[in-house]
Length: 155
Image 1 (tube, rainbow, N blue to C red):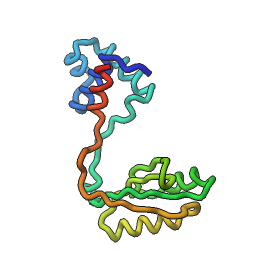
Image 2: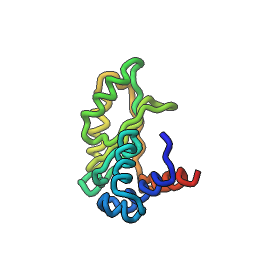
Image 3: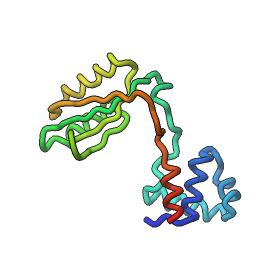
Image 4: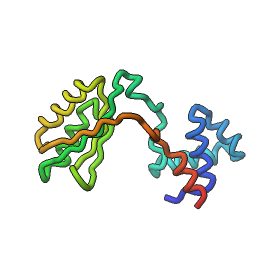
């Protein structure tokens, strides 16, 4: 899906001012409200815009320990293990990966002992061979897409 210059301006506003109304976005961009709404609908339909909810902090929710857990899976059981991971509330993301391990999960925990409990839960899942855990010490670059949007707009 092609994202043009107006789309990147819309996306930039959505990221910089997420609580602004569609009418105000249209005014700021100098386009008709219907044009803006049609662009938003298309970008949602095409999967460019994937959510509209607030971004929440696991740490503020009482889970300040962040770890990345690599999960090695028995051959042929990747989907089964992926489905089981979705049932663990402390897993906030999981990806199939190349390299060492089959899945990479992002885990939020209340404290180190809680993290150990989550890892033990993962190890006990049918199809999990082993795990390897890396604890994050400090976030250096927060999740972001605005620089990417800006680079797409410059093309």
